[in-house]
Amino acid sequence: MNIFERYLTLWVALCIVAGVALGHVMPGFFGVVAGAEGGVAKANLPVAVLIWLMIVPMLLKIDFSSLGQVREHWRGVGVTLFINWAVKPFSMALLGTIFIGHVFAPMLPAAQIQSYIAGLILLAAAPCTAMVFVWSNLTDGDPNFTLSQVALNDTIIIVSH
Image (cartoon, rainbow, N blue to C red; front, side, top):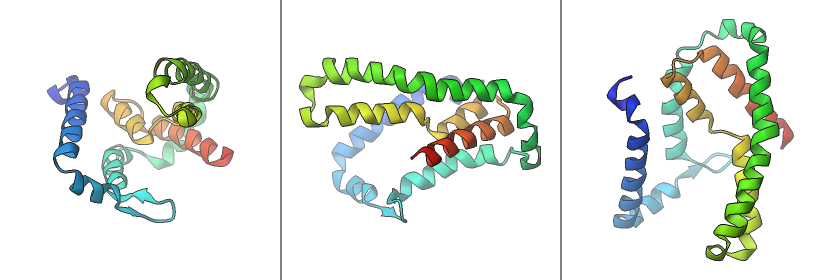
């Protein structure tokens, strides 16, 4: 692994700290960026552009004609579906109830605690598509298999809502 990949966690942490610091120094600028919404879903445009910049390198590696071979990886797809829909939502419900419902409850508005827990459950079932692609790319994962897993999980999310 190169230095960027080896210390990715550190770079992410530094970016978070830098983002919070810049938000305090230039709140007006970040208010404008936060308000840059568009489209039917009211998605934040700068975030949408950055997510696409994370996804495109992985998409360029995909041989879309080989997606029919995904059936050969049925065990991996089954494990992914089981973890995403039978394990993660329930484990996040437990963790959310413990931490949001009890540990941090005194610091949060009481009327919003259940909403926070519900949000955590949804986040558990819906991993960030861009980050799945990035981590698969960093670990030299099979781009076709990654795409098929992400597409299936995203399809389930869309249909179930």
